[in-house]
Amino acid sequence: MRLGIAAVFLVLALGVGPNLVAAQANSERHNPLGATSPDTAQGGAIVGADAQVARDTLLRPPADHSTDWVDVAEFPLKVVGWPLDMLLIRIPAWAIANLTAPRPPNFITRGYRAAVEFGFVPTIQTNIGPRSSVAYEQQFTRFHPFYASAAVSQRLSQRYRMGVVLDGEPVSFSSEVKWQRDAQRRFHGIGSQTTHRDDAFFKHDSWSATARASVDALRFFTLSAGAAYEHNTVGAPIGEDESIFRSLPVETLYGALEQTEFAQLEFGGTVDLSRMENFQQKGVAIGAEGRFFFGVNDTDSDFRLLSGFVHSYLPINPQQLVAVRVVSQIARHDEGDAIPFYHLPSLGGTRSALGYPTSRFVDNDMISIMSEYRFEIWRELHSRMRAETFLFFHYGAVGESLGQLESEDWHPSYGLGLRLSQPTMLLGAAYLGFSGEGMTAGIRASWPF
Image: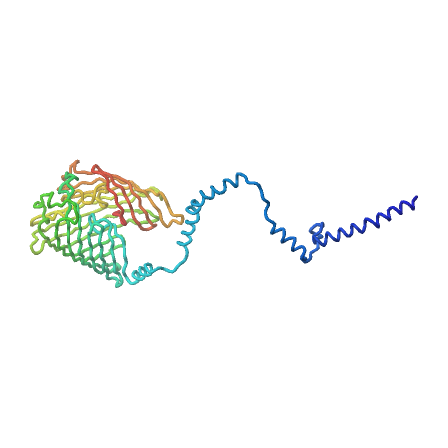
């Protein structure tokens, strides 16, 4: 019995064992990794048959599935999305890549840089005279401290200057020869009750030679003195504007029908305790000036112009500030015919009343009170630049004398604006002004206070 059972097991071992060994060997030959775990896998080169199997697998065409809703919607979506993809992604990406790509400067850029290095400096001016509008100015500064410049504005006003500036401590000196044409100066008449509907203009040509010196007696106290000669001619305005020669009795305006020549002396002094610190002006500044005109040749007129100002800056906090400016001008006729009408003090414009156009009101005396509330609305991340909005209220008057001003002589105006500045200097300002006569607007690269 036992011998029979042993014989059966021997037969099974002889028949099954060789088959298992052969199958395992065949599996390892076609699959080098076999059925073992990665820890027990055996490496080896890929034989030709294995490479052919892999190649056949990669080249096998994809399965052919039946059409579904994705296939139906894909094409129209691509048709619709292609323009959007071009407009919103590809074209902007191409433009940015081309604009920001480093490239050598072109002919225009090289020419501009060469001109600036040589001393020709082109600039855009917001004002080269009364109501001049935007102007292009070409400056020549190669032979410092000597300079020369030529400017022409949108309204065809012109200004040509040459001179020398000697900045020293504590004495400074400047001298200049200038010819200027104000193509469209505005004039409504003399007095505080003139109507803005009488909107008339004239052309004012003048050439002058001046020499001035100033002394910084202390760091905050400056004295100045100067002498000058000027020649003036008045004519019809350039353009189609209404002329004062058609709408006003010009025979009553001294200087409208005759040329005038004056020799001048001027004296002034300023106490400046203000400073600009961290985008804000602080402190107070006070100044006064007297200009004395003496008629020469056929000009029978001697007069004087006296002016003064007070600027005060009251910070509320690092973002808010109240600024107040009081300015006054007084004209007095000493002897001779009269004071030329274009030299009379005026109210209106950025220097005295933003809600009115430049030189809106004209008379012997003028006073203006200008107040502004400024507050920060944006500051650059590294505090290199900031923008602030300002609200202003101005109150001014003109009359024969300051002591005779009455309530109807005062003209209020108000408005708002935007100032852009660096920590220690103003870059520019824009404003909208309102008054009983309408609205004014402007952009300036400088500000009176």
